[in-house]
Length: 311
Ligand code: 13P
Ligand code: SF4
Figure 1 (cartoon, rainbow, N blue to C red):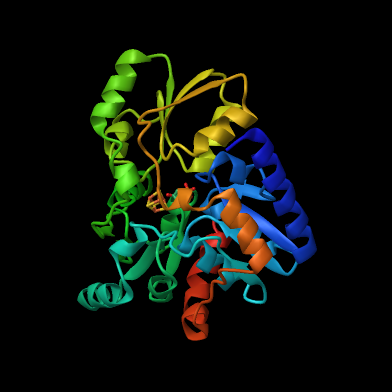
Figure 2: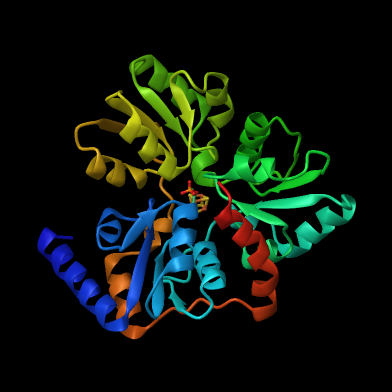
């Protein structure tokens, strides 16, 4: 798309958003031109907090479906729109409410901690939600004698075990994008750039390996945590292990530092379904509205509010 077309679509989006009294929220993995037109860009935790305090009549969520559902639960009086209803999440799809109920039945009395990458129906069966930004704080807020069922991401769960020192029951789900960033990618990066700092998202398949030397040159962080870390670091060169959408924000906010992907193929096709044209159409045609069953929303709200309030 030409720069002129991008600029004119962005202008159209801004005009429509003003007229519609809509706030545009975008995840760090969104396309650069979508991030650039948003009112707020952030990680799952930051976006949930923005959704809870957003003003206006509507939220247009440029992200995936579970994020828009979470926004609707936190801001039930607002219309929540997603520009493409097909923007799902393979990790969230790795467990449904029936599977969770069956797991809970085998562990009576256990506390359920669900990563935010889950459907509203799974959140409704959960005691706590967390994101990669506050998983440690959430686990540490639970009494030590309680058994914890942690779902759905295995790699995030392994990391949570390590930083909290707690033993967790782990669901064996994974994000195909992050799981595809393998230990051999890290070996290659360390060999070619031994001076670089390694920023690793805890959903990555290489996260367990990176944990072994975490703290020296490897740092396991949420997407927003990567930005904050790079802002505060004296270092100039960073290798980034997560979905490549975050690179736009890192380059834009820290132009004097260098950021390279550990695996340039790490692209979430669901996140990339949200285009500038679909965002424009969403605002113009007031679609696609995301709704959550009232009873499910009421049951999911406590777990989500605990997440928003923690860490
Ligand atoms: P965060 O932005 O919260 O780190 O989450 C990453 C992710 O995979 C969202 O789908
Ligand atoms: Fe889901 Fe993975 Fe895409 Fe994140 S990157 S939305 S976890 S499929």
